Each structure stands twice: as structure tokens, then as C-alpha cells.
Length: 105
Image 1 (cartoon, rainbow, N blue to C red):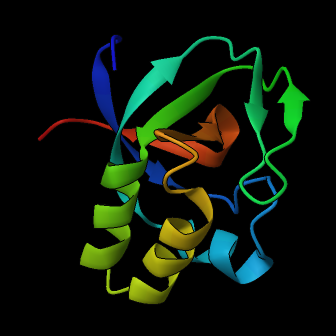
Image 2 (image 1 turned 180 degrees about the vertical axis):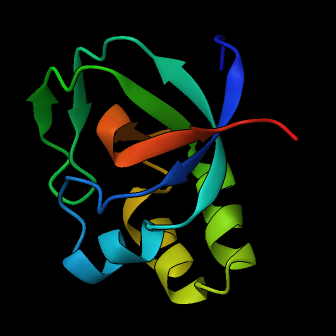
């Protein structure tokens, strides 16, 4: 990641192709992320189809997301992510309105 890394907490079920229960499991998860002012588009985690322009967002390395889910006691969600996103994706993207930045302690 090239931009400064911040810590985010997912506060809203992320938009996207993951099943509802997978998206719900991300709520409350804290992860390091790169703040992106504009994203020209993203690929669906299931279909791998391109969806244009999702605006301000946060990019999280797939490994950081995987680790955060495991550490939060959600191995089934981490396994789903592994099975559907790895190795096709290096990062997953959350829209800015789905997250909040946490202030460093």
C-alpha cells in the first residue's frame, strides 16, 4: 500500500456480492487500511465482474482482512474469503460510508 495506513472499523454491511451473512460478519471488524479518495472500479468477489466508480473507499490487504476475521473468532468467514477471494485479489475495498477511521491511542 502506498498511502498512509489507517485503522478502520466496518460499521455497516458492505455492498457487494458476498452473501448477507458474510457481509454482516464484517461489521465491527477492525483492520489496517489505505484511504483512497477515488476508486475507478472494483471487481466482484464472486463474479469477478468489473463495477465502475465506487468513490471514496478503503483498501484492505486480503491477508489483513483474513487475519482480522480469524482474530475476531470468525474462522468461517475467513474461510469463505479465502475460498472466494484468494488468490484472485490482493485487496478488498470498503466504501467510506461503510467504515469509520479509528483514532490512534
